[in-house]
Image (cartoon, rainbow, N blue to C red; front, side, top):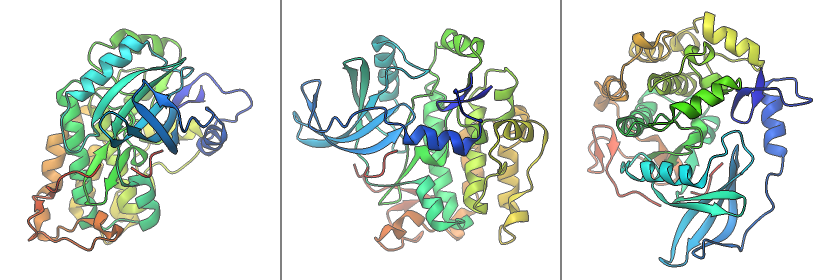
Amino acid sequence: MQLTQRGIGPALPGKSGTVREFQKHHHDRTYYDDRSGMLVNGQYRLEKIVGRGGMGTVYLATDTKRNEAVAVKIRDGNTIRSVSPKRITSEIQALSQVRHRNVVSMKDAGTCGADSFIVMEYLEGMDLDRYIAQEGTVPYADAIPILAQICSGLGALHDKGIIHRDVKPHNVFLLRDGTVKIFDFDLSRFSGQEQAELHESRHGYIIGTPHYLPPEAFKGIRPDHRADIYAVGVIMYRMLCGALPIDCDEVAQIMGKILFENPAPPSARNPSLPQRADEIAMRALEKEPERRFQSMDEMRRELQSGAALFLKIPALRFGLGDIGPEDPTVRAGIITQPLLASSDWA
């Protein structure tokens, strides 16, 4: 098996199977012509491309009926997870029921020729991947409120029977006010989709991004919500250490290390970290799901335990100044300002 779009499966011709080679091939490829100026569904005018991802292109658009900015993702009709318009509609309906400040709001969905589209709230800020690249390593005190909000958003999804399955910094967005948003549900599993997953497994696919997959994903075991918990552990490790716990590119090496090797605790790479950071990260990264946190809420509570002593919201480094725990916009590590409505989709 080698990398396929956003996962592992039958080999791409001419590719050696390293993550970086796949990503370069994948992002250099032109999936769509620029459709800026098109009116989608008679309502959404595509203004400009703001990001390209594994399954589509995201546009800044104008909702001409409500005269507001939205994000419209045109999804490629030829990806490994091509699905019927009826299923797309049911997925969007399920996501629209998740009304949580840490999950991007879904507004509409439909078809656009051979492809499909989804309409989301438009966000302004940067994704967590860019933020980590900008910072190098994120101080523990700064990482806690981000991680706590990731846990909170994923917990809301899990409560509705939705498993994200592609949790990684690239799919976490930081708004200018410090609010965190989970987005990109192209690989998510919704309640009642067991048959679709059986089809994927029979064809050799392991869905997700290799570095963020838990061991059970490589064993032919259908991962549950604790796969997302493992992925948050990987995000935490990368934020605190500036490196992944499994830091190699060859797919076979990634799989082998995830299955059989234990990463060094974060403090071995970043001695400034407290023991508490090691305890939380390593528990999330346990190889056996039963030994991890059993819910996102449990992990969030552990992250926030004692955090008020050094709370500081890092996303406000975007140019709005710092906010401390005495500020009325902060409540137990979660910012309570109204959400802004993204200029850095990918």
